[in-house]
Length: 253
Image (cartoon, rainbow, N blue to C red; front, side, top):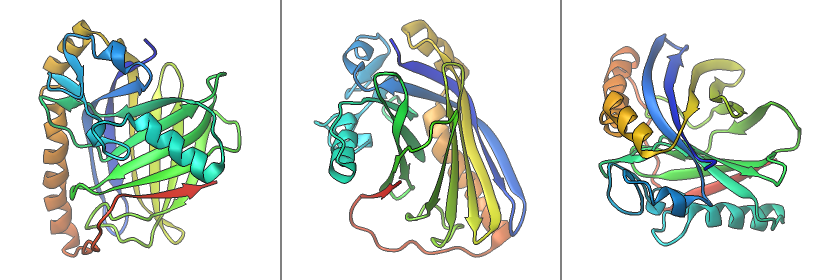
């Protein structure tokens, strides 16, 4: 399979108005969304049903349990960019572990027949179960894909909306690297990102890495709240969340 298990770590470095940093291990997957039937045959990994590891349609895209997220991605590309090609769509995300998952960010890579990335979608969630998808059309061929976007979605009570993102993405057969710098005007206030290396997506690897990273999915939510308490002690103020009714999308490039 072209899909892989991804062993890596997340880092977070708050620079302004105070310094705060942390790092923790992650266990992610890079799924070719055309290989779900093969993945579903693995003993420890199921699609849309409970297992040690699972992948649920309801957690991604239009969050419809009957719709493969690939359809959501291609539909939006066709609608906004008038591009109806049937790209291969890969999704980088955290899988469900014993039925639980929270993905602060998931990354869709749309590749053509030459394996070149033509579109990216950054699917961002907050702890209120809200979601925004940033669709990006890639114009320049480069090993590192750079995108500059206005922040359009409430992520954290410690980050206001009037900010700017700079994404740096590297994906090859040996590495996945995503760095996100957050700016207020021209001043960088936060650096964060994820890096990982691929491992075989099979039952032996799943079992071995689940033991090494027990309850990795649950730990993500624990670390978010634990670090939020520490940040609040330093910052002592927070930004309230605006009311929001639906998942949203934006298009760039």
